[in-house]
Each structure stands twice: as C-alpha cells, then as structure tokens.
Amino acid sequence: MATLRFVAFSSPISQCYNQPRSLPGTTFAIVHHGLQSSFRGQALRMPSQHLTTQRQNTRMPRLTAMMVTPKIQFIQGTDEQTIPDVKLTKSRDGTNGMAIFKFDEPSVFDSSGEVGDITGFYMIDEEGVLQSVDVSAKFVNGKPAGIEAKYVMRTPRDWDRFMRFMERYANANGLQFVKS
Image (cartoon, rainbow, N blue to C red; front, side, top):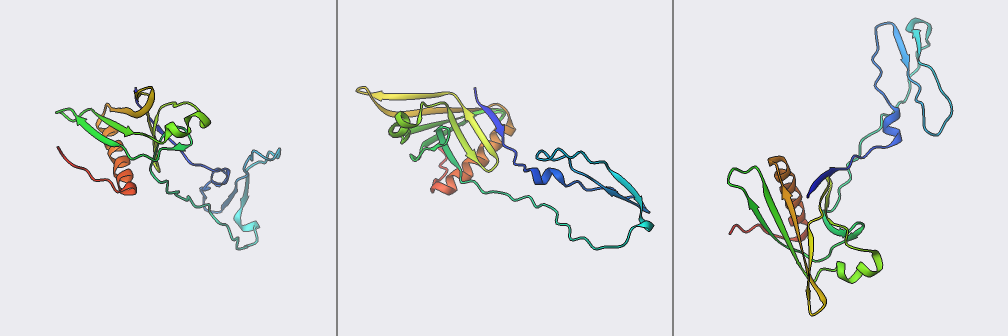
C-alpha cells in the first residue's frame, strides 16, 4: 500500500517570533518560552505615552526554501543511481492509477550488504516523500538482476503529486515522457 508523507521544515527561531496585534495607545511585548531556557516570562501591557521612542532593529526570520534534487531510494539515505523504466496506467475516469518502475541491475544491490536491507521504495523531492512497500526483486541464476516497484495512486490529488515528482525527476535525469 502506498502512502504519501509530507515533511515540514521548521526551526526554533521561526517559532519564537509572533506578530503581535497592537491596539491604539497600547504596546505588547511577547516573551517566548524557549526550549533552552527555564525563564517563564509574562506578557506586558504598557500605555505608549510612558514609553520613550526608540527605533528597534528587529529582524523577522525568513523562510528559506531548500531545493532537494529528486531521488529514488530503496534504503533510506542511499540514493539509487540506476535510472528506471517507468510505465504509467490510469483508470478511464482518472480517479486512480499505478506507476511501475523497473530497474535493471540497480546499484542498491552493490551496497545493500553494507548499508542494510531494502525497506521500501522512496521517491524524494522538495515537497516530501512518496513511498511504497510494493517492491519485488528479480534473480537470475541466484544473482540479483532487477527490481520492480509499484506505486498506487488512489485519488486525483495523489496522481498530481506523483506527476510533479516525475517531472522533477525527469528533468534532473534527462528523461522524456513517451505516450504509447
């Protein structure tokens, strides 16, 4: 069964700044209850006429988007170097579909003894991770020869997400879509 998982990026810095709402004549101070401090502060309200005007150089944290090169993994943390042959099927009504990935002599067989066992099929890009556990290996004369992985899309949203991954993966690896 395939699942869709999103990875959210956050930092302690982005959590400690809140946009205070100000009322005319009132100033709010927000004290962050940090994870690394035992200080427990209290919000202050002070009329603005009792405050001296000072310019504060406050920098708001910026969200930095990290570009992740689209990759496929069978063992988490170990990128697959072999480019697969991908076949797509879609139902007539467009509500579901399946992607079948065929890897001939994948590089995971070279490192699986050192790194660990194949735990699934992971498609990783900047939006997150698409994964499936429908993975089967092909052996010829007792030696690993290939891997077939299936990813099932049950909704139009799953299909769209998968197509965004495949577009990024194709661009990064020089692949083309050929309609049969």
